[in-house]
Amino acid sequence: MPTATISDVLRQQNIGSTLEVKGWVRTFRSNRFIALNDGSCQGNVQCVVDFESFSEVLLKRVTTGASISVTGEVVASQGSGQAVEIMVKKLEVLGDCPTDSFPLQPKRHSLEFLREIAHLRMRTNTFGAVMRVRHTAAFAVHEFFNDQGFVYLHTPIITSSDAEGAGELFRVTTLPADGAPKTDSGETDFSKDFFEKPTNLTVSGQLEGELGAMGLGKIYTFGPTFRAENSNTTRHLSEFWMIEPEMAFHDLQDNMDLAEAFCKAIIQAVLDRCKEDLAFLDQRFTQEEQGKPQQQRSEQGLIEKLQFVVENPFVRCTYTEAIDILKNSKPNKKGQFKYPIEEWGADLQSEHERFLVEKHFKSPVILFDYPAKIKAFYMRLNEDGKTVRAMDVLFPGIGEMVGGSQREERHDVLVEKMKAVGIDPSHLDWYLDTRKYGTCVHSGFGLGFERMVQFVTGMGNIRDVIPFPRTPGNAEF
Ligand code: 4AD
Ligand code: MG
Image (spheres, protein in one colour):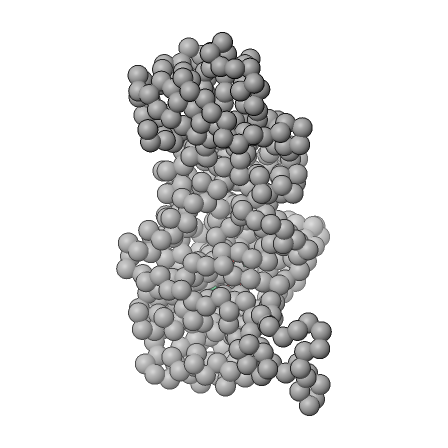
């Protein structure tokens, strides 16, 4: 007999059919009702045992966390909690679970505690829901780009370039930690290293993505990226997944349009396909919000928030307009910003971004035309000579969801920009070649996948939307 998923059993409500299900026991109550979950959906199937038909020894082994196989008939439920249940004819314990040491007892555990037992937390309602939503979002990413004729390009994980020029690199080396070979001037001799040059884990696939776009037209990447920044926040990971589309013949306007459509498509897919998990997460979100001071509470519920974002156009606002708004804002005048906004050119901190999105516009916002000084070298310089065609998409509760730009396509300007920030153009001659041979206007952006999963699940901490988070001081599992 083929094993049915609990999701199918609950959805199909095939009364009268006999089937087998396998899963992990959530609870076993009154020696009669087993709540069984197999991860296929939020709900448990209730398996009803007639204790007189089974040995006491066997039933004692049906403990929270044990894996079991159940065969029985689907019947209309007598109880009110569920439409159908399974009358158990055959019961087998596949894997015992000792009650005294199993850390996941059927009660509410804190997210902090669950992070310590991340190897088991996918058996909880919360992490089951988050991981299924994460899957749906990832699938929607591929669907969105595939439907629009983008090519999925696999850019390298190990690279010798620092795309963002921020220097937050994890070195990749096979040289011994002690006694690495030295050059005459006493520095590590990377010519003796595996790749015969210094290499690191990628911080972004963008530069290679641009090479793809300059031949294939429209590409996207979706892979892990690595940043050795010492940011212990609820929005930073040392290893996170990023989606980076890159499009030839697209200017900044086209780029903004695509970013907005992309964000909405992911959210819509989750709204359409994860109704049960979202209903659970929505409830959870509301409970969490109630624990916060009134002022910090979200005015909308989770599902309401997602619907609002898909139904309304994102606000578009230049950096210069944003600075004016911030300069004249109440928190700035009252000295409530940690970093007061004094003049044009200031880098925006997350407190500023959140003010704009959550208090001022009350909507996702696309900020564009930033000062060249605070953005990466590859962004297209505007005619004013001081701003670049950069864009950031800011989301309520999250801050920066997307960062991107139109790229500098003019060879001479790009070389000057590299020199100005201390990048040796000869190190990126392959990148410059695209500007030498048939250059064109092109654009792209990067979306931090975990930040999107955070938004759609309403989870407060980014460490709770990736199975095994890597953060400073933590690479468990
Ligand atoms: O703004 P970033 O640094 O942009 C780039 O890497 C560009 N090369 C993208 C491009 O134009 N192709 O990163 C892009 C996004 C951010 O907006 C944020 O959502 C996410 O990646 N991100 C992080 N997410 C989790 N943890 C971190 N440490 C992150 N750093 C950036
Ligand atoms: Mg950025």
